[in-house]
Image 1 (cartoon, rainbow, N blue to C red):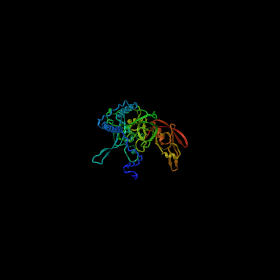
Image 2: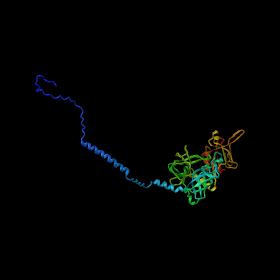
Image 3: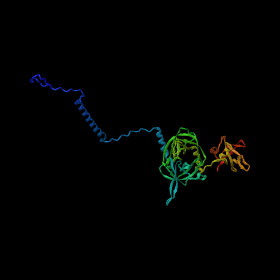
Image 4: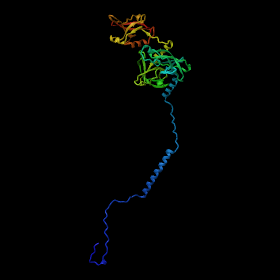
Length: 405
């Protein structure tokens, strides 16, 4: 502080100190009111109480079992399928071929293969595929293709088992008839239908024992008719039914049924790279099955109609540029011999041309498979018109068929 020296001391008054200059800055006030604070506290309390209530609601309260809702009536197609299965399952059987294991002290039966079958008659006749009862063999001789397993067992729907007798077989159609001694009450015959009027798109039902699982039902439709397959002995089987009903190993020999529960075919083969169903299965038509089975039951063998000839391999005809079947030989006193048909011969001077069959009853014959198929619908004693190619000309010859050996 500065003092004017001219003033008396008594007039000197102290001057207040100058306030330091203040600069404006941010406000330090929180600006929070009590109502807001109380509201936040109430919200926090509500959250805590709500969590406790929810915990007790979900975890502490007793569990109440859920009620089962009523299904209602089954659809009409479901009801018909169930009815069909329950009505026909007693007619379907499980076929097992047995061998003997003699590795121990005592021989015991062991299963070699399984398949399916069905009751044809309450007299104990069972129908299945020939290949189901065929004896396993590593060779490919004619005997191995027609021999059957030593022991066959049939298991019925009630799981009772019976040893079966192989009554008759027909490898050409891959069919076999077995016979068991069981009460007639356990052997309801399967209803028979027809296969000549089947149409693509019809429903199909297959019952069998795929992979040893007995009484399995699969469904589908007829995918095609008039297919052709080859039997176990190389003969053609024609008019085969194709279906997409699942057919797996073990289904062989079982019935293929229509929607009325009638037999329309015998499940026989599949096309599959994996060995399981690929939606392409084949069944023997019931019209052919009926004809074969009834002959086997009555005569225990099939009497086929034949021309009494030996046929040359189809390659021979192709080499000679002949669209037909070359006659390699005739049976002495047989139908062809009596009708004057001439075989081809090979001598020192070369080939002596004879007759080649090019048609039967006006139907073209291109190879041996066509010839077998043409004779299939005939019986011994029937007369057919055989067209042969002889010295470059077509000649019609009337031939009366006889029983083939």
